[in-house]
Length: 355
Image 1 (cartoon, helix red, strand yellow):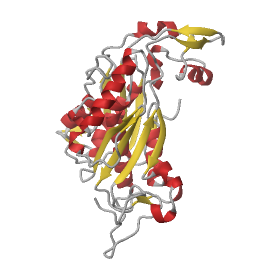
Image 2: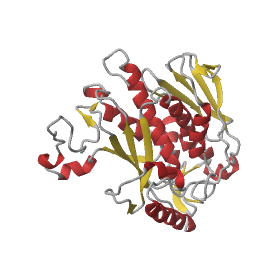
Image 3: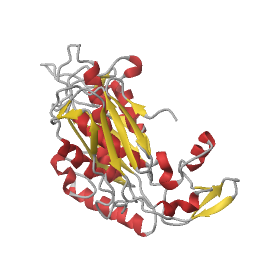
């Protein structure tokens, strides 16, 4: 199974399954001599871990990070950083009924078709549990680029969206369980998630990410554009179905005179409809993108699936699952953005770009 590594200079490779003994990764290409704050890394993991509120899966994982290599006396050594997170609370018996059955909208059938053999316990490698390693690696990557501030938040849940004209205080993102900086919207989002959970259903949502402090010129022309790499990073996250930067799809409804980011007399852009990128490179403005997540596929109600023989079967809703993933996905989006930005920074260390 290839496709387990991400990045060019700063390269993360992950391993492990949802119900195996542990998940982990190797972060290679990390510069030497950086003073690391491992408490910050753990704090980011705590934002992603299950069981943190009534809005999330009640699986109880401490997600305590073990750093196996690449750090000595609190600093990076330049050698590969080994990361390990034990699985403490897997209940594999909850998935015994899926040994020969395929759930709708899961990776069960596609994995079987491709590999001929699969780990049906919690989805195995296809489980979002793998993203915990990404969060740890992303929190380390943030320490390569301390001048850059990456903050994501929930801006929509199901049919409910925040008013885009709101003047937001992003310091309030973690003041509620939904991770929405607008208290009124947060209440609406939480009520919608709890209502869906009550009837055994699920909801999708949108996460908005704002990156501040980028210099102009990060990215490469043609195939390695900055928004292309960010899109790949976000689309690699479980349950993501859409990515847009700046005005995104709305740009298709605008005229050029409405969308163009024109300049004032001293050379400053008057607007930021492009979302902080032009020609695939960062402009120096805030980089703003949105990520759309589909509703969680596992429902706490019966659904029709099929078995290995292609026969219709009833799939019972079992296990511990999020009714909506977006509150816990906020640190995942931030982590993947950090890996992309830090990788570009390392790629451009010999150029004129400075952070």
